[in-house]
Length: 480
Image (cartoon, rainbow, N blue to C red):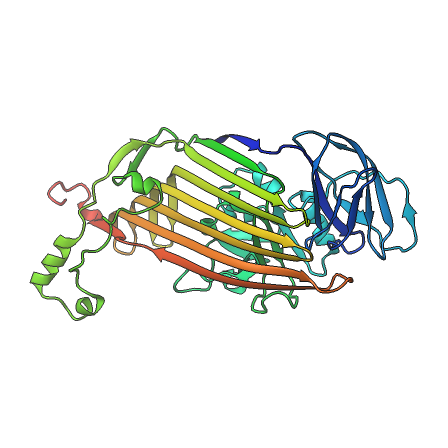
């Protein structure tokens, strides 16, 4: 049984009421740039930017009629639009491209907000390709802590080893991973695969899996293109705090076996004690047959960290802090920034894992200590029919697993006792600069992207110890 308790607090900083939303084409679902937005009865107004978004700040509290005008589309008026003090009113509009028809009164209901489930489904309906996905709203309602867990909820996908995605039955080598419009490099040294468990779910805006090839996607996938979008420019100023605690009946407050831990391990870093000594022989020296003297010196230089401590497994812990700022200028241009830090630690026990093969009968007991630390810093500027964004994501994971295995080896008629110490550290840094520009009144757009990625995968001091005792000597006290 797993119980998750979460709490969050969001503080918005806003001095007056604000109206904003997104304007889209009713047939294609595409955003419309350059739509004139007027607050009737006042001199206030604005226009939609390159992303189809509009924003009219500092509106006094009250009810207004809002008019949307664009050449080639029906003029739409929305009445009874209520603006509240110190609040944001979101009004998404769909325009019909039937010329000459004027709608005097249209009451808009529902929302087409980018992060909503309805927006994601509408995007799929109007898309020329076959796709599926999950929005930030769905992720927020789930207990998923990383992207690989969130991908389990997308139809047609399977997660292998808790990190690699399989789309339509095709293994990870036939899929491609993308983030904010650019391809992610492989996280593995010996295979083409991306480990989705290193990206915190809290930093994701939406995930879309495209299952058919289109000109705007890479051509080297047969299963699917997994496209991850991180959070964009905020709609308003805010500060958000969140925390969560999880209880697992199989692990929490049970005896947890582990190597000695320090503050750095809890933050996702290694203190260096697991690294090889500077004078440790190189791979070439080891392959060249070391003398017994050098073998003894090399073994003595290894860290003596075989000691196991028994602690009480703590509940899983999640902490999140987010800060958003947006500034709108008189010429209707906007600058926004979003900062977010996410931390998670869990201590899980996987008891009685049976490993039954043709000649082996093993039973494993695993103790996994995991830390995930992620940070996001996104900036965006929209002006006229142009939009420039700079998105940065950093994340690192620290997984320390201790395994005890007991069982029989039928091929050698022996009783085995096996102990394994596994430490895996992964890091990801990605910086993306992209732009979007409208070239004509027909909404012809050009998009460009420049990105830089760095992925680290470090597995220091992996230790495995195996003891064997022949079945004939099981009850012989003279044989250890």
